[in-house]
Length: 378
Picture 1 (cartoon, rainbow, N blue to C red):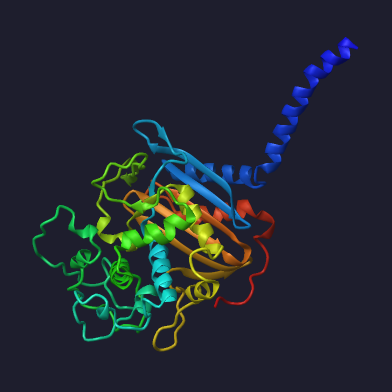
Picture 2 (picture 1 turned 180 degrees about the horizontal axis):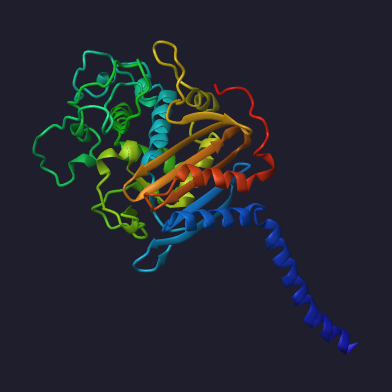
């Protein structure tokens, strides 16, 4: 009898340990090993220094992992605390806070933006918020037209943290096309949009993002990437020069906050993506409007909605945005009808974020990649 008791005393803890281990394995998302393998393979092939990946299924975060180094020279690995620049994935944030104001009746999509921001010069044409949202306002980008900067002195050390003063970087530039005539992607247009949001919302743009995006979604690290501030866990950026991977520049992006100036952990980018697919930030009818391809004034359909690129594949509607700037390559791809998504962030400027995201999608849901695509996007 004493032997049986002794055996049970030894066996039961082992049995419980095995049960806990089995339960943990069952709780692990089924595609984790496949995604691990494909990301490691792609990183090795590209020479990427570091990256982080999040996968969303059924509106929940099922996979979150860092790979490689956040700071190669000091041997700091990418982990859940690492902060990456969002680059142009910042644009959907700006679009969301703009559409929240539309829902509140504080912002009219078809009103002249100069009614909100009189500091923007008269271009002898009406430019609307809707046109800024879908890149049809004719605002210059970086190299598609002449960029004219306003020359003046500022009393404060970092004037372009003020989104209205940031207009001085380009506001005197001529339009690249008549508003509404064609799609012309522009980060400057989203800087102007952030100024419209600030004036329409009667609150600093960054504060509106903090109050209506970060707070309800409990995002703890999403914030402006002010280069003059010491941010713990900020990733070092890397680029290639003559095939050698070297540290990138610490270029200031504060002046383009609404178009590409946010920073966060991969968990917060995933949290934002979940909030989008679960309609926690705007109403479903508003999301439907944002996820509808916009048309130019001559009726030609573009591939962009209001703040998102729009497509369709075997899983239905696809809404996405990628980002590329100094120190960063990013991508956010969402399948709202499936409540699925992938977010990707890297500190390596030479990484093809679109190709890696596609490989992750095929690894995550391999049995579904060959289904025929439904009808054309909306």
